[in-house]
Image (cartoon, chains in turn brown, orange):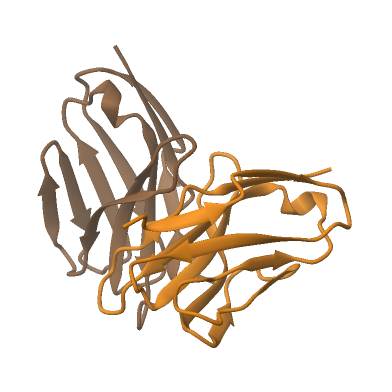
Length: 111
Length: 112
């Protein structure tokens, strides 16, 4: 069974602070995705990374896929209240038919 | 396009009752998935389908059944509801060759 552990589990910060969320596994993934989920809604895809060492930027969000494709990180610069939500990493192995979701990081950004 | 729709939004069941959670997508996606999510946690895969007539078990299939008679619909059946099945259930779909899964709004199920 593949497991994806996210840390921290909870994060409460002030607007303008920077933060990093980690997603770690002992398994190798062919691709890794990050989703954000708001209360009462389904997850929405933020980014997909497929190459070891790949870095993708989406405005204030920076995503990195580890060289060995076993881990990933999400860095948010100058967090805003609109960034509040549950952040989920999800890895696909082999043919990619199925995703294994991480344990989730609940982020709260306060004014 | 409506995307992925799920009904009902909320449901309360008594122990031992049965029900079907409905999921429909209008994007002509061949892959469809059912997940459950417990409070503040990630999603666990229950069942998935790679096309009409083909289904396979995920990580937590016990207590559930699925069918896929059409591309659009992927219902999830609970035969004998148990308190451990209290959760939020999400349906998702994906087009072959693309990574992104599109999620429905979820069904919140309580079994008492």
